[in-house]
Image 1 (cartoon, rainbow, N blue to C red):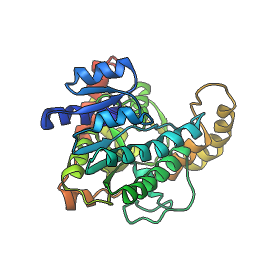
Image 2 (cartoon, helix red, strand yellow):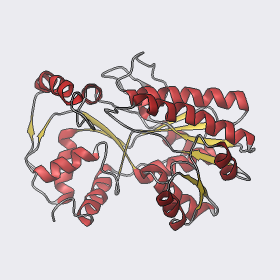
Image 3 (cartoon, rainbow, N blue to C red):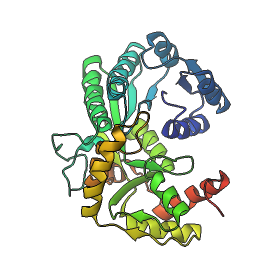
Image 4 (cartoon, one colour):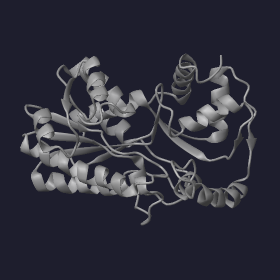
Length: 322
């Protein structure tokens, strides 16, 4: 597998080791190789552009899980993100074919659906024809390139398309909202839809895709689409923290957010806010993750359970007060 040291890949690696025996995982750094070895997998030094490393990792394997990729919003190097996500994916699939691997499970994203504003995204959605962010573009192009490469070299590719993956260990994506609400106690928020899936469900989806998924098909994985109001109320309930949010009308957020994003982009270093982030947030993704339930048998974790485990982890890390 690739991407074993990331949030999604790490959880998948531990499950594969527990359930499948021998697992080889590509790792670029010495630290990454130690993490892989500590999890009980076999580290292989290299990256997705290292043909020799890919060959060593894949020899004798039946299935490849390609989880590695760059997931950045407000990236200062969007070209590099596109190169890794698109070209790196093609390299992995070509290497799998050369090694005699029969199936590649590719970690895509629900963002590739490109559903129009106000609609619910599913595997049947027509892409709106424009991208909200460089990340969305990179994953949309990567998914298309994955299926094209699979057809060219004769490998089965199944795509797993998660929404925002959350749970213990995650501090990005929707977790930023969770942490802000829990710490601020009186956060200033906007009512928008959030689409999230539990990390354990995302891992199970990958395993189901490997054993039961139909080649050439993608499976959206989304456990819940809820508004910020409901999410914050659930956070208060499971944490025991009295959260008293103040909600700003969406029109005000649009009026102030875009100029602030432009200014933030002019500041050197990592941008905390940018125009593509504002576009993505205001678009408000809603996803239908029912196909994988019907066809492969996935069962989703209730959102309250995900939030409860996540809050417990925040507290264990000293990120949220008792």
